Length: 543
Image (cartoon, rainbow, N blue to C red):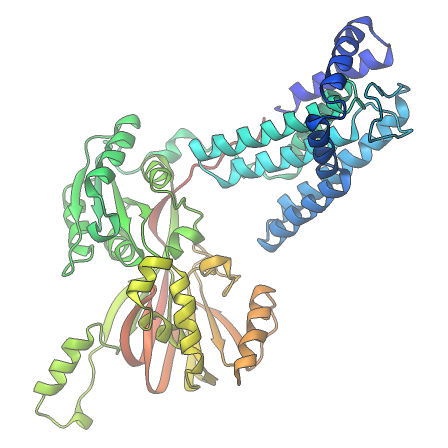
């Protein structure tokens, strides 16, 4: 186990302290006067004092509580238990260990800022710092993909630990062995609790998990040139990753206004590729995935849009280079795809022209149903009004914040009368400002609109929002962020395989963030596990 090395260091140091070994004295005593003189009442002394205050056990406990609260909010119960147990066992256990070892404190620095009758071994500051940084490093490993960013974060955390440990020497209040003992005890304990409490599903899967298709390693890249921007630079990044992972030279396809991805995906499949990498926004991703469903060919996603909700809900990297690496070398995950049938027109201009040229009585015409798919969310009412009201120029400047601005404008959207049927059951009447059907649960900024929704559970989640006044939106926001399960007329939820929604009057509709016109009926039906998407290879648990 990874805990074996710090545990061994701890045992050796503990034996040395317990027996007052000469080899330990030879390390500690010559170093302490030098470090104390270096930090005696100068700028380094002030810096060391600041680090001492910032790494006190009270600060460590507060930060661990914040980390545990975040993992609990994300419903990572095992991680929450691990963080809590690590803090309690390390900080509490370190205090008990101090009672076992009778060792004088090293007050080498004149006028030291810190006086305490507590035994110095193992160092409490070092133990607290050790558990906090070990937790931070392990959380970094499981939440980031391999690459420069992960290495920088881990190196920064390790460097912070070295600085805090050295500050104890500068202040002259601890021997080097006190600091190393605290760090080793914290590291060994935290990693051991990880192995005990965190499920082993976090281990790297068998190497076959990263092989898809026929194994010939033929890849097609479908890119939206508008979203990509510098196509040449993007292709260079892809070629570099493809070559490093042993894949053959890719086939290249670019989307157009007339064909956002379906035709390119069909051509890629006809060419017999084993993997399709799509680079663009949610619309491009949806178009490609619609064609790749049920083919057994996986789709790698390089998110380049404003929303990127599918990527965010699947914890895919938003950094282009890291996303390419996951798309090429990740493992396949089977997720659900939903069909979307509506009487709304997908082309408002064409619908208007058709209406002008239609000589029949408008009251006798019927709108043809259009069927497509969605991966993220579909809905009608205020949320669709938000999508259609987004200023494209503002979106280019501020990203997804433009949706927030459009949302403020859409708050006055009127209440609709809707009927909803779940799994071919009876229709139930609601008054609503917006109805959202989700295959995923989280919006931008991590807002848990549908917290129970899962991409691979074979179910669709529905939320009906109907605040009476403006202040009602604030109450709904509190309930949504709190993930409350209580339902009433203001916020109602349903779950099913098939959802049918009817409105008394045509209402704006949206599909994966794209407005699809006005309609009065939609049907959404989930298809379980029909699409393979590349996700990061699960990081290894410490062993």
